[in-house]
View 1 (cartoon, helix red, strand yellow):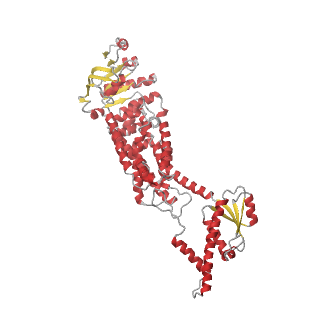
View 2: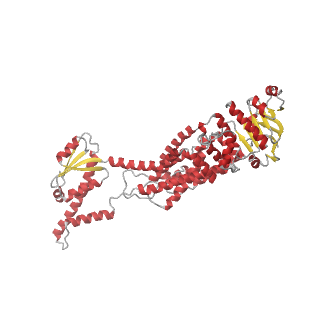
View 3: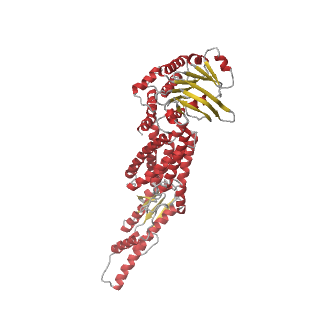
Length: 223
Length: 375
């Protein structure tokens, strides 16, 4: 379980996240929505241990972020908004590159299987020749190499075609429901949020997103 | 370390030509520089024509002395041919050693021994003329001394008589033994005396050090490239700390560079006849440690690759000038230079200890800072 208690984060005098608390159970998919600059990416980066909150506490499966940072990191997968792969390498080389640096060893077949599950079949193709959707899929596949319990994705489907978007969506749903991973992701696509998420966290003062989602029947947490 | 080697090989594989170019650049650059400089030096000798009317031993010896000079290229012609070549400006000047040259010297006559021709383009005529005059004077002085000794032998009826050749040979031997006209050349920052200096003596390892500095800087550009890539976000979640990750990459680069340093060492020993001393290997080793560490620190200061390349070229030029690798530095400044110039210890043939320690401490601080911000 991911437990966030009263976290605050500010870069200027005005806090970007203020006294934020929520908890997520394994197998749940959480959508993070809000206008640009509301603090969605900041929250993801804090949950990914890349940034630290000014106040508050976070724990994942009863492991406190404060005292078990390195241990917690091994159970977190973070997919940044930018495609974080080596453009000059092939899909196979990228997977092997990050497997070698990962805390969990996987063989060639297992790595290939990870890509195939996402319909990423161009195993020996150079990344620079892949479509935007394929690159996004590889971006996620690499993150799953070390089998994380908490998967954080920053706009994972931005700028890609509908088919790839659906494929990624159903893959994430499977990962959450079958592997009991906690998945949190940011998106501006309300249809996608409606379709996939169990809960939605609305960040920011603007009630625009709350109003849109009010008829969806989803549990909405406004902060 | 195997994981780092594997992952780096994956990246290196994609840029083999560029990497190989910069790795062999110091070796090829130094060899080309030294070879070209020697060729230019050979080609820059002043061509002079000699017309040898007197076939005597003394005249032949004079020709040999001229040919031994690195300043002139001697061509033996007939007078007609020599003047034709002079008119075509193929020769700078022509000197005619007249018949009876040896007899005139032996009889202590010094006038009209040699005639000369020049053109309006004979820029080197005066120094060449002075050189020939000094050589003739040397020979005539020796001849005069021999003549005087023989005369005294006759006057005082010495029982032990010497021949002209014996006196001549003895005179040369004394000149050689007494080292009367020898000048020792050495670099201002070395104690090694160059016995047979060329007009311009190049410091092979000094030139190599300059080329190596540039190639190391250019091969360290991966730090800037990777720093600006989204992929670095993933390094937060790898199995090793950032401190270890970067330290291992530096170590790997160091091993790669040192391998090519060893190749340079062998190539220079074979191709440029440099000393094959094992002690110097340690000098190269510490120089390489210092370069890897300091260049890693330096590259951290840049975000844009183009400004880094510009700075690298400028730094190389500045260090090339102040280190004395190309232009010798003023000796009293040598010790000061060793403190402010990281290349100086290597150029002086010493272990680069001070700057290696500075590099090591700075790298440790940078990596600890990275580790802290990532914790």
